[in-house]
Length: 253
Image (cartoon, rainbow, N blue to C red; front, side, top):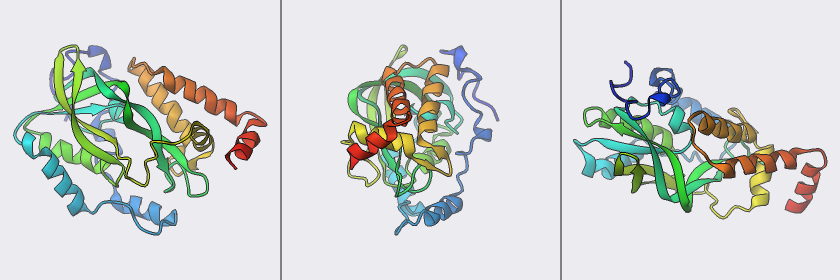
């Protein structure tokens, strides 16, 4: 199965830059393996939602959209690896939110309890440039389940509908935004902690610094500008320079 004919009609340059869902790790997530990783990380309680809870949340949130096309906003790896078959993609801007490195990983993915890692989430801010995918009414139920398993695996995000701007017109899109009440979200994280977590966090999926670099590379490939990411990486690398890490550690103490 390939993307629908005309999926890239607005932006033919994006064709070939978005991974085929059949090749995506996220298409059929192995929760048993994820549970094993969390257990190895020594988590006292598995934070993952039960399948029943997660599915109930999805159905309640999407009930008003049943039988209709569904738009989904993407700002990180979902842009180049959505793991879903979409009918249309557009470049989009989401007002009121920005990419923010406020998702703290202590579970062994890109950080640990001793050396937390950091990943991106949508937090309040001026605006965020990304992509928006249209899931056709015929496939929205199955494809939204794939996205929900990925984005709503554990308490991190709130699923909200928000107005999104595209060159073809405004629309309402499903957005997964940082939930400040979640244990893994620290919207008030200091810059010092951001740098330390990104510079030292590592786990089974790689380092947090690699994650940041991958986000930057993905944005560059898709011609999405976010100069704040470039500045953040420069500061992380300066922190990692000889002598800087020790100074940063003393400052954190």
